[in-house]
Image 1 (cartoon, rainbow, N blue to C red):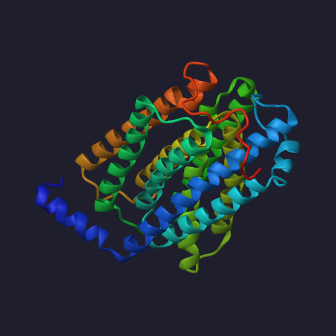
Image 2 (cartoon, rainbow, N blue to C red; image 1 turned 45 degrees about the horizontal axis):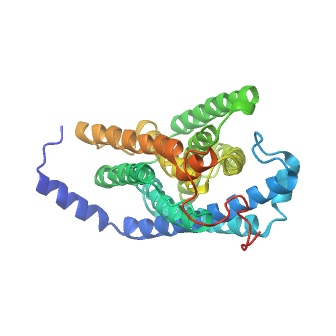
Length: 331
């Protein structure tokens, strides 16, 4: 059992953030969060424009024809390039810092995206939505602080990788069955949560592939992880684009920046052994912080000003025409 004092915690925290890997990994993760914010806003604009041109606003899911049309929308292409930069930054961060430290820092994207969406859509955050955002960001950053104290990395054996791949297969199958059976009744929250879960595995597999390539261990299992990574990325991308068509971009980012890191951290803790040195109080802290952040996502989905406005429960707080979000902007 860990019995250190508050001073010991402070010293460990300072020492952890003096680690060269963290000093490089954390800024890279934050830069990736900013790229993610702008990329989400532009991609959302492109998806809404394609739906409007197709006359299918409010339908369930995107058709293959609509997905192809996205590639002709300048805003969606720009957003995709920005998300590409976000991925590059995140992969760079994962190369030098532990997964359970890097992943949660994406929560800063929620704050940036909320401000961008306010500026673009005219929906000012309400007191309830601000409380939800604070819960999301606060819960995830407490997660980071605890993780920074006790995160460790060790070589992964084949049984751990096979376990991760097996869990991913089961989770993906469950999500796809739910989508096939219930997609006409699915709301934005389902696509957001599904994308977050799948991308949590994507981050984990990316970390695994990077580490094994660095170790010169590129064999059949590494190749299998890479294939699973690409397939999961494609599935997650579909869920994200559909979520953009069903909800505001900052709500989508809220789900991704909370659910994604929580799934990745759980895998890191339970399967990869990155939290093997964490004492009981740290594990309890992980649970409490995760519960607070999850509550924030659910509350934001319920009380987001744009969601309330679309349902007629909240009037538009500015004079901008939200029913034509492409007006005067890159389309």
